[in-house]
Amino acid sequence: MVLRDGELPTSDNCDIADPEEAWLPALVAIPGIAGAPLPLPIEYLKVLATRLWDFGGPPDRGLQSTWYHPPRSGDISPMFAAGQWKDHPPQDTPGIDITSLSKALQDEVRRQALELEGPPAPTADGLARESAPPAWPEKIKVHYLAKKLGYSSREVLGICVEIGVPAKTAQSSVPGNRCAAIRDQLRINAALARVGRRI
Image 1 (tube, rainbow, N blue to C red):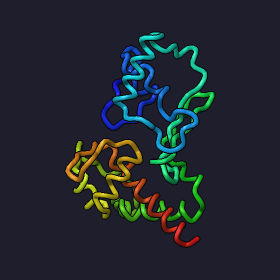
Image 2 (image 1 turned 120 degrees about the vertical axis):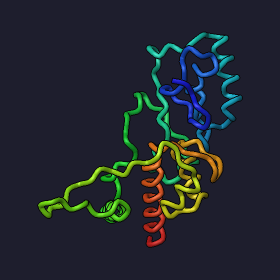
Image 3 (image 1 turned 45 degrees about the vertical axis):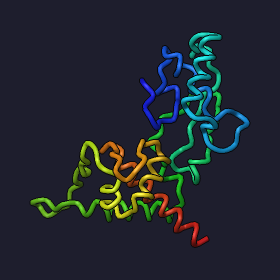
């Protein structure tokens, strides 16, 4: 794969044959640095990665003994959660495991999901059937998505940063296949904020 603008460099999206990207995943969330996952701009990290390449060539993934685990989308403050280095590769997880939330949050997330999607359409025999999820356009402007979801453009842009969707302004376009993730994360953050206010 090729690292795209706005993406966090990981072993999955960096090209091991490219001197600028081969060592880039090793420079993310440097151990001992608290705060953001990228202590330096990506362009500078590419210079460092090229320097490592010049000294030792491409990394040998067969000898790799530590892997970077990015912060999960459900972390309370992913902007300042640097992720972790562990002795095993990250598992593919679809995002937040709803069962890890409290019962009240689970119920609230389910209620909001049903409210947004609407009730299932009735069938000829009068029984409700589950309908297909709504289709999103191939690309959608941030300001239009925000209006459709009932949030501000600033809130949607914050979620885009949080989950790694490259968007910088309200006029930016986001891929349609990420709209559901943005919607879900907005709902989860709103539910977490409500619970925080009650505590």
